[in-house]
Length: 246
Length: 259
Image (cartoon, rainbow over all chains, first blue to last red; front, top):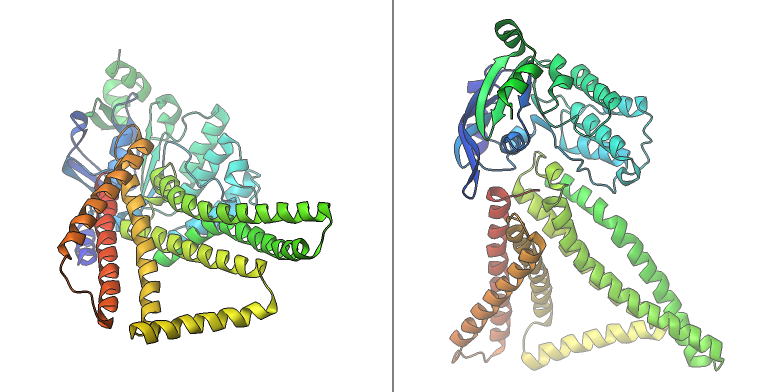
């Protein structure tokens, strides 16, 4: 029954927003983390979810993934509430490396291939090879940077409808940052939406189509990057510094 | 998807349990030689060596049992409630499938450990004549049960096996429920998991005692009563397991709190 309803909803929303937040709020106890957030994201867009530390970016991403349940309001992925079906369409990069450390890269490829119908094993293997990562090595034996790259490769090797990348470039050197951004741009499904959550704006600015600013759980702005440049005559980084001036 | 979860869960746990069983097997064979040695030789060195191997064998049995328990708890804690939870809970599978995969794999390992320990003990004590004697002894016990209690020995054995399965699953679920509740808090997750385990244990004992009193005056005589008693035990165990299952799945769905 659930499936039928979900399918019906999915068809109804096909062609529409890939992600919609309607009056979405989340509080931890008495502490509000997100306050009546409203926005929608169309397919084919690369969106920067920008805000200072603790502004609610990770909470929002967890809600979209169904790792948290909203206190009020709703979040819809391809017209469906987060669940088993939406997870097949969302490719998520958490803000930490959380791959099972005992697995080798090959076992990890098996794992992703088993669970995700849209996993492109060839693409993943090619990227691993390109980086010279030994597939027989366990995740535990890899350096922190390599682990992050492996995780990104797994996430970007899926043909998902929505990519949620939480701090993909936090804590890595500039060369790796470039590699990560290039990987995202060259591997994402062009009909999909990509959400990149970060506070390192100058690094990601060049790849973004759109930005959402959030601060203290409130949405401050949703705008296209071109619009910001044309109307305000400044870069996203400069606007961010102005809006979030301490 | 459950079958895929099971496949990867067995892969993750088998790499630990497999080698442990192999060590146990090797030590049980050594223990067998040691027993013969201790029986036949008077040489001091050989006697000490034999004794040491026996100590190692007993330690290994203990280690296998403890490891099965630790693995059951640790897989749930690290794989679902630790950082790996970000990978597991974003897979296109339901929370029910996640919990079932953990229960099934844990029950299988508990049973396998039980069988492995029995086998190891048999190997250690092996003389060809023993096999015949053991088979004979089992047959005799069954015959006695059938004759004395006038109940179906095989039926009783089957009920006992089912009770073991349900009981183990129910105990695993008690641990899972405690962890799922304990880890829903922001701090002291492990400590709270232990506290909730004892809270559940206390609640069960309290209910068990009240339940026992309600049976007072109930006539348990007659052969059918033993079957009825076993079925009641299985039913109660399953009911307790079901309550813990609901607690676990609801907490994971509604109150998941990954760091």
